[in-house]
Structures are given as C-alpha cells and as structure tokens.
Length: 111
Length: 111
Image (cartoon, rainbow over all chains, first blue to last red; front, side):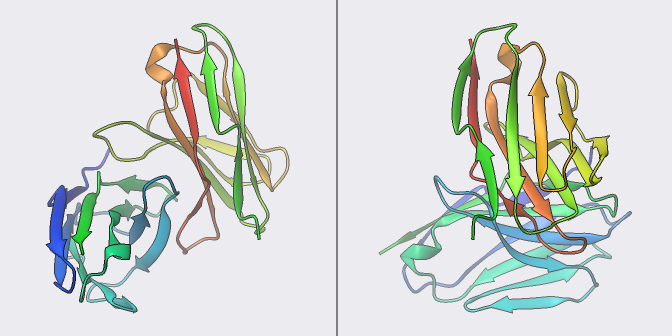
C-alpha cells in the first residue's frame, strides 16, 4: 500500500482566481503520475499522465508539473470558472498497472 | 461512443447473497480494473486484468472474484456479500501508458 497525499482537502475560490493544489507520492518505484477530474455524479475523467521528472502538461487553463525526485506534483488552474468545480484526484503508478489514488482536492469556484 | 459501461447502477443485497457486477468497454483496451470508493478514502484497487483470460489481485481483493473471459468484459463477483462491502464500485479500462476511462459506478448496499 503506497501513501499518496493531496492537499488541501478542499478549497473555495472566487471566479477568476487562479489556484493550485499538491499531490505528494513516494519517490521510489515511480512509473507515472496521473491527474483526474471528478465532477459530482459523474465518473473520473483523465486530465494528464506524466512520466518524466520535470514534465509539464497543459490542457486549456489547467496545467500540471512533476518532480519525481522529491515526490510531488502541482496542478494549477488559471482564472477559475464555476465549471471547474470538481474533485481533482492524483494517482501514483508503480509500473505494475496499479494506480494508488489520493483522496482528492475538492474545488468549489464561487461565481 | 459508450466507453465503459457498468451494470447495474444500484443494488441492495442482503448479507450472504451473491451478485455479479458487469463492466463492458468498447475501446479495445487491454487493461481493465475494478476499484471501490469509500468515504474518506481514495479509490482502492480490488482486482485488475492485463488481458483476456488473465486476472490479478489488487490492494483489497478479499471477498471478491473476477473473470475476463472476453477482452471487452470484466466481471466482479461477490460470493457472500457482507456489510463491509457496501461501497461504490468503479470499473476502468486503459491502454498501456495512458489514463484510465472510468465507468459511471455501481452503488452497492449490503444490509
């Protein structure tokens, strides 16, 4: 069992604010780091899969960075919109096709 | 484009009853997974499959069995349901090295 921690647990921001949250994971046996977006009453949707130290990925206003040596990844949302409200999950992959999920950061964007 | 389809969406079982959850994907993915999601915990892997005819145990396999007789289907069985198996179950599939596509979940209550 691997410990994947996300912080903060929840976050409220005003529309237009930029925000970021953290995923911490073990720095050994790293294969990939996944980010998912999970809206209420829907299923998790893949945002990014990152494999290399220093990777940066971007999708619209959302971007993510990866530091495998120190075991963390940041997810950034620029100019938050109400439709960004969701739980953002990260998951650590060891290469055995097993993903170990964090408990998520619940983001609420207030109009 | 159906993606990953789970049936049923909801089920109530009595302790000791058995049932099978069906997961079907139409994306020709090799890998399929069953997770459970409980309050305050991250998604936890029950069993997974890396191809037709193969299955493997995940983090929390006790009390569950699986079968992957056809590439597109991954079945999760509960032989003798227990209240501790009350949870939301998610199936997912993926090609190697990419993010997972999740089903919409099955909410199971064991009374």
